[in-house]
Image (cartoon, rainbow over all chains, first blue to last red; front, side, top):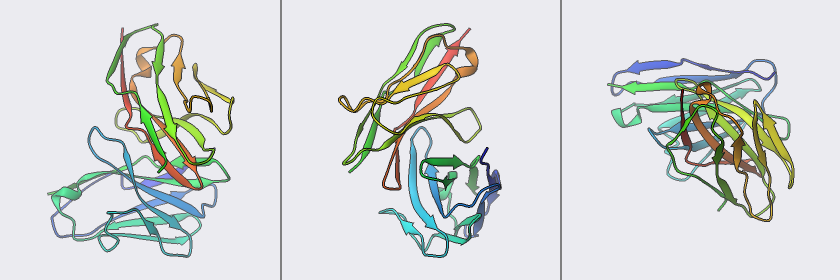
Length: 114
Length: 110
């Protein structure tokens, strides 16, 4: 079946540094990938839709300069949290679209900013 | 806008009890509907889906039927197990836009 690999699974970084999270579709090509953020005890919040070869579409309220998304190939999308602060600590999950209704999720990245 | 309303948890059941987690949606068109499950420490996994009205999705003993007339997609299982303890998310996809419910935490006790 379709597999999406997300890396790293956990990362701890210092306040003010940047962190890159990778999302790879391993056995299929994904023209569209999604980035979600999950707050404790809350549902996933869609941050942005990433389309291969074009600029990401950000949801309202999501800072595009802080959460940089690059979808440079059909199998890789990256999310870079720039100048991270403790309030950016969260669980980030990507998903890749396969076909008309197939969505496969990565295993998530737990980011802790200290 | 499109949205999903999901039964609030947490839900605690004894093993072999019957499970229902309610999910209703609001959408301007005809979305595809999904149930995802998140086990402790893991990412989301697709549990089942239905792409049109009256479709029934099923997997691992779980079922949900796409009811257009009531805009619902309730999740059911006849006999839950301890291993079913997880958070369950109802979701819809319409026009490449995905929306999730708030999630329902299920705890099954032996």
